[in-house]
Length: 292
Image (tube, rainbow, N blue to C red; front, side, top):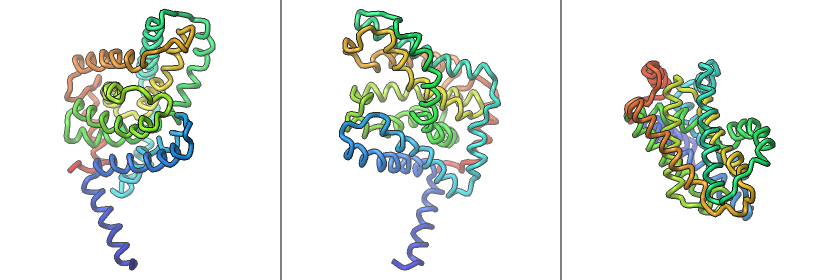
């Protein structure tokens, strides 16, 4: 292949990405993550969710690639998303809501097994902040640079907040398919239930993102808090071997109660608790070109 043809192909790919940034982001996120996961899952038959960590950076990498091709400032995008100067109440709301979901999971599992104990709760509670920090940075929270940091503002340029949340949630669920296909621990239950869970969480995360002028940081904390929920949840069950129901059966109703309350209170158009959403979307539009 000649140098000129290679250059032409690169320009064509860049043009396609620039013309269809959101579609390119979704495809890249899936390609990067699946490209990392599937070989690892094949080589390590008894893989745990820890093996998913490298591929979990796929959405963030995909967002950076698209922004770079568009000529946007990746540094500014990262700085804006990780700005920690947010009203304290939003930190409390984010972490508090994740903790409530964890407690609901614990009570639900305890009821399903007919057991209830708090013997392990002090130790689990002491480790919970550390667990949330780890999951926020490496155990799922890092995905938020792509899902909320890129996809949500890009799609909201064209759709309302609810439609945006559903689209992102569905892609987000499909993105996890290899974990279900290889039955990675934590991904052995119903994919349909998981999809319902993820779409509901996507609605909550859109609300958090829109209400905080596009904070990726809070989205990461909530994502990390939700992923850490099983640790708190199982602390209420005396004999873990008695758990014979999927945690999704407990979490899906709880998440959707919250999501529906938010939709009822703030509306499907903006899903924002603050009037500053208009400015947030405007700022995002200067960084991400119009979705074609």
